[in-house]
Image (cartoon, rainbow over all chains, first blue to last red):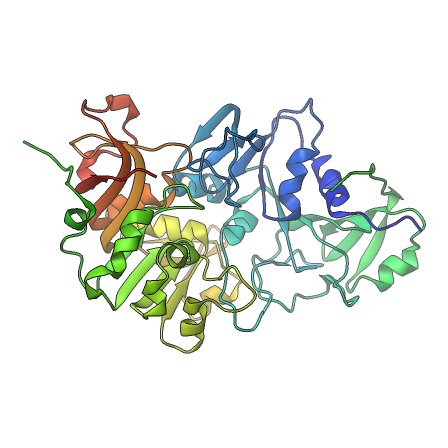
Length: 226
Length: 222
C-alpha cells in the first residue's frame, strides 16, 4: 500500500480544487498550507478573517511588518490587488455568502455534513471558537482537511458527531490521508483512494454510510518536503 | 479648538475606574494597544469586564491582571491559553471566579458594530445547531433558523493605530483596524495609542476612522 498522505500532500490535493478567480479562506493548521500548492497560473484571492482579501507569501527576512498579520497571527504580505479592512467588514464578507470556499480542519465530519472542529473537550482548557462557525455557515462551499482516523485508530468520518458542532450539514468535501470523499445525501462518496488500500479497508476505517463513485480513482500526490 | 492628543499614558487613561467594561482591539500583534493594556493594572483597578477577541493577548501584555484576579467577566471568541497547562485565566474560569461569554468571531464583531450603530439586536444563522444557542431565542427567516444576538457597548475602548491627527482621525496600517475600528464606535471613551501624531490633518481620503469616535490619542512608539 502507498503510504498515507503527509500534511503537505493533503494540503496539495485540496489546493488542486481551488479554481482560478476564486475567493478562499484557509483555516489554521493544514488548510493554510494549501496556499503553497495551488497551481501557479491560477489567480486565487486568499481571505483572512482579521481583515485581508489577497494574502500574499510570507515576507523575506527584514520585510516583516508586525501590523500586517493573517488569522494565524503570522506576519504576511499582500498580493497584487489585495485589500485590507476591519473585522466587522471581514465577517460581513464571510456571513454574507461572498466567499467561494473555506477549507477548515476538523475533529469529526458526519455523513449528513455536520462538522465539529472547535472543542476537543480538553480538560482544564478554555474554549476557542474563532471564525470557524461563521466560515462554515457562510462560505458557498466547505472543504475539510483532516486525517482519516484518530491516533488510536478511531473514525473521524462518522455517522453522527460526538464533539460539539461547528455547523450542521455544511461540509461538501473531505480530504484525508487516505481518500478524497464528497459528502452528499447522508453518505460519504469516495472519489479517490490511495493506491493499494482496499475498499474494505477504507470502509473499516470509516464510521458512516460509504459508497464509491463509479469513477473512483487513485489518489496520487507528488513528494513534498515539510 | 479641538485637540484630542494627550501628553502621556496616565492622562490618556484618566477616569478609567474599577468595574469598567473595556473593549480592547487587536489581532495577533496587529493593533494591540500594549502600552495601554499594561497600565490597566495601575491604580488598583479591579472587577473589570474585558471584551477582546483573544484573551491570551491581555495576559501576555499584563500578566498581573489575572495573577491578581482583577478581571471578573470576559466576552471573547478565544479563551484558550498557549500551553497544555491552563493559564491563570483558564484556571479562574474553571474555578468560577471569572465568568465568560464565548461566541463566534463574526457574531462578536457584528455585536460591537451594532452597538456603535444604534442597532439593538440582530438575527444570524451562525452558531445555530451548535451548543452555543441552547436556550436562546430563535426565529425562522425564509426557511433559515436564526438566533437573536444583542448589541455590545462598553465604557472604554482601547486601540492602536499607526497615525492620528489632533482631531482624533485615525489611519490604520496593515491589519491594524481589526476589532478596534468597530470598538471605537461602541464605547463611551475611546483611547488610542498611535505610532505617530501627524502635525497636519490627515488627508480626508486616508481617514479610516473619523475622529468623532475618538476621545483621546497618545503617542507610543513600538
